[in-house]
Image (cartoon, rainbow, N blue to C red; front, top):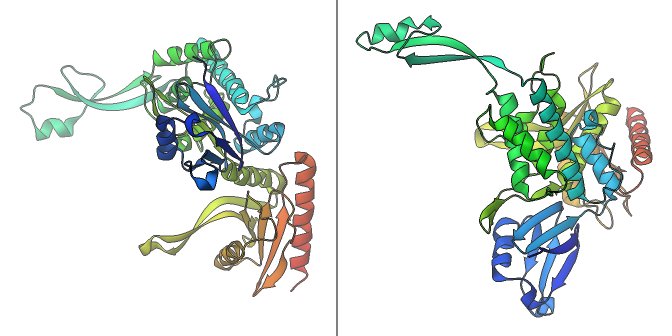
Length: 405
């Protein structure tokens, strides 16, 4: 039986007749995907229809065996690909080679799955990366070095406490690859005629040498590489993408299925942060999601989207807050209060609210010692031109605040 697909555009709504959504599907959406889809049951408010409203996510949700929901982005699909490329440092994979004809996010997912699986298979053919791992075990025979302390504490034991090293491929670098391939296979997004055979082969090759252990997206970043495993760096970057977008599993028929969901406000924040790091990296240090402790004992803190410091002096030049969903008029009072508090906490004279499209009523006001501005970093226009307009606005803001001494 073919799966029925309901298409929803980001922040858009659709109404379905009362009988078009089963109780099973409604319960599944309410329990597991309330953050992604707002669900209103039939009532006089919805013309006796089910009303589904997409929130700030795009991707695909396998709701039941016969129903799936496709969440489509409001930004052009090519721009979404480039945002993902920058945010997840995928340029080393040259993912846009061969993207002709890729018209959806699920096609993009398959394209990246093929790239990862082929890289893993190539590495397996050349020899998987191994390390010497230390072990301390009690064995019935002598291996490596004798561990005297346990023996002296319990001299009556027959087993021999030993310390030894084993040259093994069952290490974290390889387990991350195996776990990611396992999650891709469970996603249900790869087709038998395209990515699935390659992903299966890669997973089976890894399964022969490593045990399967769960890893989160954070395990893929800030790792150390050397000349023997430098090719793992871009593979782990792809693993980061897949694991970060893989939502919680739920029972779907006889299987556990994984949705593929991109949190667009978070992606927008990461895209702007990574772009700023590349553009301003020589003169400024850009810190994303910096935590500022207000009262550590009470676990009271700020999580600031972006803090930009001058490298030479260490002075905070800007604090920035990205707002993916732009208001119809000007910035909300709560957003202004928030970013001013961030600036005061970090000793910055300039606070910037960043929106994906121009506001009808932009802000440029001094509040106490802090100049608060709104700037646009568009993701709906051509991205190179949009980034140039943003940097021009940033330079103007820098010049303006420098002249206010």
